[in-house]
Length: 342
Ligand SMILES: NC(=O)c1ccc[n+]([C@@H]2O[C@H](COP(=O)([O-])OP(=O)(O)OC[C@H]3O[C@@H](n4cnc5c(N)ncnc54)[C@H](OP(=O)(O)O)[C@@H]3O)[C@@H](O)[C@H]2O)c1
Image (cartoon, rainbow, N blue to C red; front, side, top):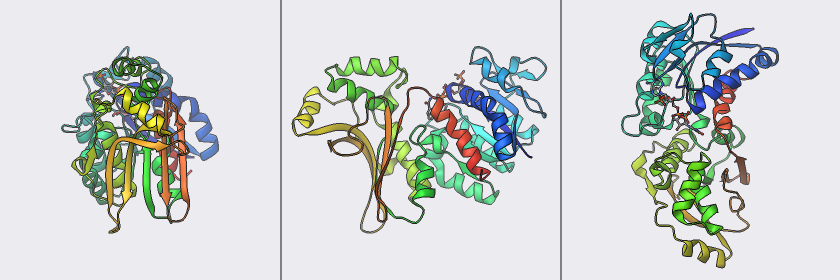
């Protein structure tokens, strides 16, 4: 039995669901893979909890943001922050699931760097730090001989990076197209049913596909940072946010959707990377008319999908019907098992 000690920062939608998944699967992981995964520290915005023997996962998951982990009897410390925890607690893996911040990447940026410097592997769903400084994280991880895994930062619960690095390992990706953003998919799907843009945006918020501030989604930033991370992770690029051409959804009109339909096409919001003759990739996000027989054209309002075209395998497409944060949260478990070669 191999013991794996873990720390998590951020117990929101993703973090607290992930702790629940770990609780649900802990015995199975022990039996099936010989891994004894323990959460030795957990931190939220108001405090932290430490237990070298492993926190009670059910108790942490049950908090559901109603109370801080810092209030847990016997182990909780109100006000305890992640940087202090990373100094005090030894662990093998650091899970980071705090809110995305595209200004300076904090609080994830400092915590992720500190964990790597302490020799911990990093598993994250937080796009901000990686979109801002992927090359820096790659170099830091190499220097400290640790691995970063982050499938949850790109296309939700899809194993998008895993497919590219494992299943397409010998191939050259010539084109990647992704329905990468649930809010935009939902808005376009509802507008094609006759809803107004405003109603469709509100609908996306109501089903949890969009944040209360929809800017990151509809202005394309979420898709931009996903394609930047993907390009860095699997296309061998040192891409930055400014390298991506970006189109906002705000000007989409019912006429544009109807015109696409009349031409036998479907209007989608797509993130794409297209290989150029010199081996570099053109990166863009925006509205695209896809022919009806395109694999992404049939995806519904709450689907994400990614199509890889490569020199060896033609086009491979994967999609997911994602109606809750559970699949994205579960990418952290998948990444853990891949990290330990299960
Ligand atoms: N939700 C999804 O479906 C999804 C899918 C893929 C990737 N992601 C990414 O995964 C990350 C987490 O998403 P989420 O939906 O779980 O967001 P969330 O619900 O906002 O959770 C983030 C949590 O981090 C907490 N936090 C803020 N500052 C902190 C600090 N200094 N130390 C520790 N915790 C802190 C927040 O507390 P307060 O709320 O009190 O500020 C919040 O509970 C984000 O980067 C997101 O982009 C989300």
